[in-house]
Image 1 (cartoon, rainbow, N blue to C red):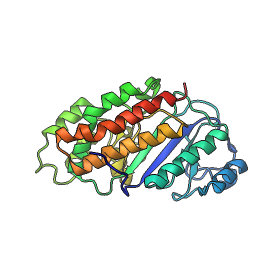
Image 2 (spheres, helix red, strand yellow):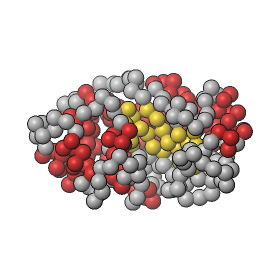
Image 3 (cartoon, rainbow, N blue to C red):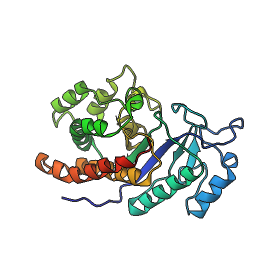
Image 4 (tube, helix red, strand yellow):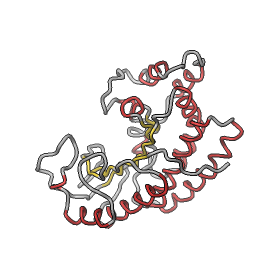
Length: 270
């Protein structure tokens, strides 16, 4: 079975080095204000039809303290959809690469997918899927060791075991699953952005914080083909979790997209 891109929105966070801006001027809640953005960067984005600013409906630059290196910053997209969204992503990557941006072993490429239509059943399906696919994802990504230890840790086997034990009656809403998720760390489920549980390859803290599921596994890249294939594969993971395909159908549905992404990794920067 082949999936096609649905109307489910997605957004990306592209961590890079060497994308310069005026460091000693004020920043508004971590977002670089438009007057601090390099003119050449703003002009290139505008010419490509990609609005740039400091609102959530624009492409924007945010401070990023987890990336090591000079000129570290995170390029954050607005909500994107479908083939047009993939084309916009590819254009944005080309622009920031032309502006001199680079990636290193501390950079990540994070994808958020809208999960407003997900409840406990869909989240449990997704966790079950990731229990199978996560080891394959980690194995496929080269030179990702620095990030795995901190920024995109594997899911806890104990969490997966406890989720599998939950009955349908216990999981009529997401409260039971929420308690299990935050019990991974000795950290309350307060709606703060940097809750420690977010630093897993699959970040469900984002679901309760902003209504998205975040995939953090992918190392930093500025290669459009790699980025697009990763977005599509994670999109299909979301749709498979939503549709709840039987076990025998899940591998058939996901394998072609995983293989297309895995093969694209030969294009990665060393």
